[in-house]
Amino acid sequence: MSSEQSGHSKTRRKRVLSLVVVVLVAFAGILLLTVMQPPGKMDYIEYWSSGKLIVQHANPYSPSKIFALESGAGAPYSRPLIMLNPPWALFLVAPLGFCGIYGGLFLWQVVIIGCVIASILLLNRHASHGPLALVFAPVVACLCSGQSAPFLLLGFVLFLHYHRSRPFVAGASLLLMAIKPHLFLVFLAVLLIDCIYRRRFLILAGAASSLAAATVVSLCFDPHIWSHYLETVRGYQVQHAFLPTASMLFRMAIDVRIFWLLFVPSLVGIVWGVWYYFRWKGSWDWKTHGMLLMLVTILVSPYGFFSDEIVLLPSIAFAIVYPYRRKYSGWILLIVNTAALCVVAFSGKLTSPWFIWTPTAWLLWFLYATRGFRRVGEQAIPASDTVQIASLEGAYGVRTLERNSRNGSPASLL
Image (tube, rainbow, N blue to C red; front, top):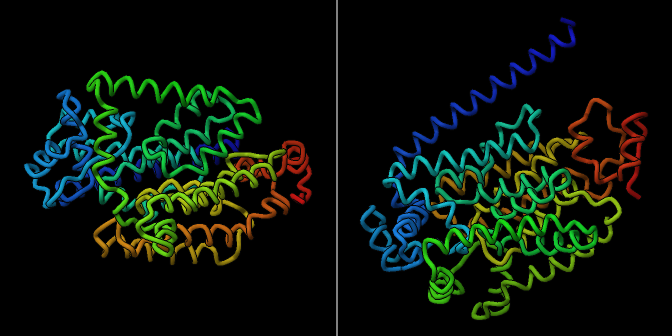
């Protein structure tokens, strides 16, 4: 065996060992969270109660039935926590209906942390700093609250991973993002334009097929699922809730009584997204340009929780592995993430106004770390940096990338 092969073997063993350690620590954390966290005080309780009702062929959006289940499980709230995700998301919570409150919590935590670990591996399985993603503040918030946001992350990462090689699978993975469609209005608008412009209709077919299949599953349990869902959404008065988003600040600055003002920043974001797409349409790559697009998408979303920002993990990872990022960007990210973790630890609620700064902070850090994201990859990239080359491929165009990978010459986007 050559010294090079021996070195590769040792590297693989180190990676496997690192993965085993991460998995063991994750499961230990799951067990600890399951024992220490009262399920009735977590957002998980709304998924468990809806899962219980759907497997009984009952209305999973019924406030009275949900309140009875949650009160019996020790929830201290004066009103029910209702899962307001669309009916096509119910297949994710149905398995919880066959479990007790603590058994379901353990299963739920295993699944959501599995989504995070799978996303890390798909993003860059060669990155030694991958386990650090488990201390990304939105990831910690998801584990502490039992929120469903890790499914959003997995859906986005699967799309990035398969959008070229298996477009139908990439489209089907969007089902996981569609459990909270209001978060991705800008992203979805640009994706639709890209599919039409490049005639990538298999992505649209995959998305439509997965949505239809998931909806049929829900209809099998409750034939009136859509009427039940719409009735609950209308009666829940979501328009009166405060959620820590830039759109909420915009609404409050003009007239807090006008609900549709929440969607104005998204409309502006869509206009920017269309301009951004056509500016780079010749070299558009979702693994590169989609990183900034997702940051803007979350910033202007009409409503959401801090835990939903877990979908920004690919953007943060992209900036971290960028070989020519700014000198102190790592320290700045550490400060921002630590501040967010402190809010998670002391706020107690994902709807706390103390979270309102985080989407802007992630975006500003990304722009700082990538030098404004104007000339991504303008400097020479060593031939050994295959991961970075793959990540930055769309910023060059295929011909420029191939030339630079051979001779290491600098390239400019301009």
